Length: 110
Ligand SMILES: [Zn+2]
Ligand SMILES: [Zn+2]
Image (cartoon, rainbow, N blue to C red; front, top):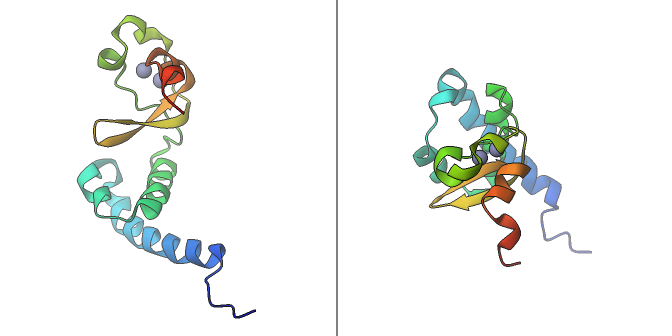
């Protein structure tokens, strides 16, 4: 009963404040936020910033698949509604289910 560890909610709140601070600055140029800027953030915060940025830009959970290069044989399958993220190169890319399947996520090791 020591209470010597922060409850997850408290950690989340602290992380969210950091993200909110970043977002308040980015709101004016949110569409220009680069991966470089995000790389400076803690991964947990970064995930929330990504979510916040998506909400701000109205592209929440939109697919960021580079269809033309990722799955050139199935460019038309993209439905734009991202359901998962996959690491492509050094970036996490939001993918919709059709794109994920087209890229062979089903074949990835679990
Ligand atoms: Zn795609
Ligand atoms: Zn897609």
